[in-house]
Structure formats: C-alpha cells, structure tokens
Length: 100
Image 1 (tube, rainbow, N blue to C red):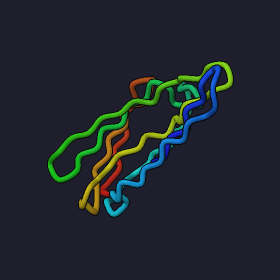
Image 2 (image 1 turned 60 degrees about the horizontal axis):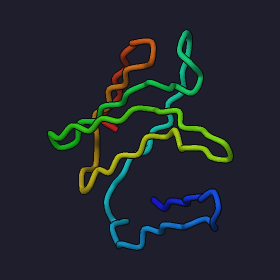
Image 3 (image 1 turned 120 degrees about the vertical axis):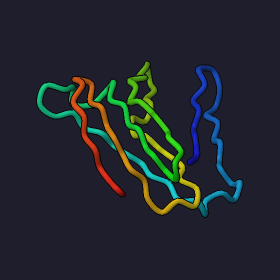
Image 4 (image 1 turned 30 degrees about the vertical axis):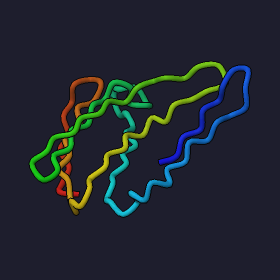
C-alpha cells in the first residue's frame, strides 16, 4: 500500500512502497452496516485466523478538515492462501465467513 500525507503548510508527501513485498497475499475488507448498525460500520471489528495466527482490526472514523481515512481493513496474509474471518458488528451481531 502507498500513503499520501497532506501537510497543513507544505506540499503533499507520497510514501511509496517499493520494498518488493508485493508477492505476499493480502485481504481487504470493506464492511457495511445493515439493520440497526451505522452504514459505515464504524466500530465493527474483524478477526482473521491465518495459519494459526490471529489478526484483529477495527473500523475507525477519522475524518477531519480536508482529509479522510480509508475505512477498509487491510490484512497481510504472507504465503497463506486462505483465512477464516469473524466479524462483530457495532451492534454486537456476529458473522463468520470462510475459508476465504
């Protein structure tokens, strides 16, 4: 992933990932709230189990003046071809997906 940083009194800075690690597998999740949850799924938590290792990330709202944070969750899987996913919505509802 590449990152762009906008500074208040300066030019934008591009942080490029040219490290050569593009060969690994990855999974990106865009969670959407349904029912009584908020539409952007802010507060939802995803847990991935990959080769016995557990990774957890949460959807955050980080908008500010002239900025926006990506609400997608990004997980690096390394050489693993699949992952088991458990998602807890902001309202506490659980959903399991996998193997993906």
